[in-house]
Length: 194
Image 1 (tube, rainbow, N blue to C red):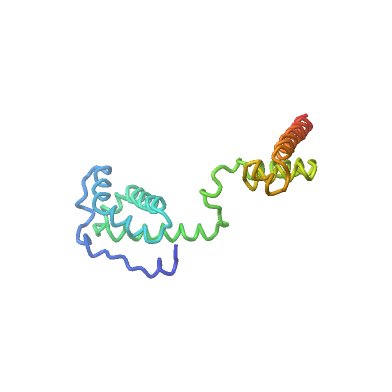
Image 2: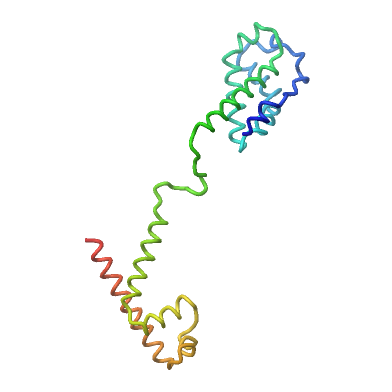
């Protein structure tokens, strides 16, 4: 919310300023329903100008009508129009929300931190480190065929042509590289799971 704009906005209360609170039904719930049907749309449009999302504007409007419901006896006794009072309450709630937001530290948006207990980023880093260690245990010839085949893409025949080795040698090195990699990862998992 921009507090300068919030303080400089003049609420257009010309409509319905002639309707005093004494015209409201006697039942409090019916009175709030009537007030809501008459003023909620305009209050929401007003609050939406200063809120970052529709849910915050909905909260402001809801709290405005809760306060109107609580103060209904005083509002009826006063005899003045209720629309200016509703907008003043909404403005005060927006000001309070702005002050509260500025006093809190910045928060991370929900979309970037869906589950605070989710360690998938850490798991990926650990998996990558484990794989790099396993690749370091391979001979350079086996590692080259494995990297060329799986990370740079291509068939064993294309990798053999790129490396200048026979196709059977490339297939053999890939087979033994995968076997050695699998054994190393199983050993690491067995050592870490104890």
